Length: 600
Image 1 (cartoon, rainbow, N blue to C red):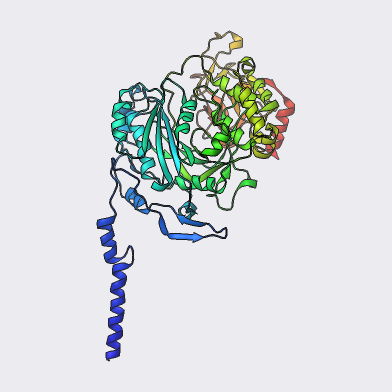
Image 2: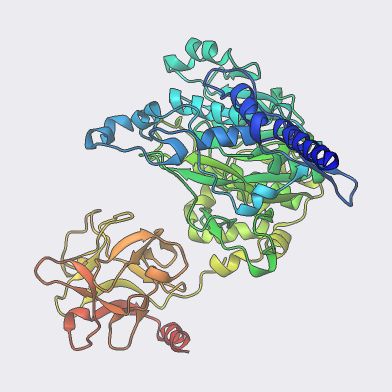
């Protein structure tokens, strides 16, 4: 009996010890919750983070990897409530969306001012990201944030997100670079507010320099091993920094880019871009594009970094030493535009790599419009030509073919850039297109294939033409008097369309189409313009021998109303003349190929 009592007491003692000392259980949990889990309110200094050393492992390469997640911060964010928290759209009344709230910033400053500066965001990473381990010894970084007349709350929210979601030991400093702002809140008031953050410093240009040279100024004074560039209206998400630095730690000749999520410019809702993980690309008018990751490059684990030919813009991390070996940005580029192509081509052609890291996510406000004036004498076209002449070799001709006006622009002196390219022993652009961007021509061929049809689209029943009125996304198509028949040739009319090799219909001549497509969402919807995506779907059309414009997704045909001139989808009926459309020019060889491919 005594032996049984002794064993009982021993077991009881073990249970008590476990309750006291095991983490997240019993008394320890109560103690931890009361004394250790203290939230960081806006204004607190420092970076409240300690790596999770409980999950550290030695890998076959002999390097230790750890879990860098800040679980305390994650838990605190989950408990938050309020308008705009967890990246939810802010509820808006009609008066909250007037033009005045956009005028100064290009986004709704009323909403920005009424959501928390340190608001919580949804963790929308791939589930595998939550299990990722990264090198224990990562380089530190200077985070460079250029701004010009930025809104007070949007700039502060950018800083708070970096401070609250970045490991302290990985951040050498945060450099705010003021590009000659003239708003009062960005002067002494900003200096006083930022004094609460020991690692934040502000430097200022002496004249308007533009985004490119402002970034260069920040980089020139940085002391971190890595340079991480952000925009001034961003929000970094959970564990965003280690995935970027890990790529660079493995190979210092690497640029690492986060996945860029969308913060709505009106209600500030946070969500992924359409398609999410895609490769950066461009068309031959030098518009940035995104294309699917080809099967050859898809990883078994979709959360792993993947190669991307071109970065989206100004959100990336790069080894500082290597950045300067590459010559930084071309200082001859003016204000903004084209710099993402210049740095991307340079990286790949001169011995480096560029990756997008799905486990690093940063939200970005895409403005409704640019709210400030660009200094006179600057030109995006000039920047693009300068990049083309420096890096694209004979492929620049494909740009000039579509943009003949570029051929006569001055690039300025590019001698130094040519010397740098030779010094670095960079490969030619043909190599880039063959080895790096080999999948780009599938979506954006250098030589545009012949269209199936183009010109005016006349309705057989009404003898009127489709007119898109130079509309943008969401604009409904209408019938109008055909310009050829005497309609005034005013700018308001747009009656030339191209049924091109993607089997979509776009406003404009074959070599100069706009980036909007005929789009229909159902068998009875109106036909509207929508941003072209090149993925068929709602924008896929067939022009059949009976003159109908057939829409395979909805199994319906484009129709119109004589009375109100509206254009809409209806059940196909070849005997209904309002469903018959006559293109001004038709290439029967191409059209027959389209139709045979669709029927096979």
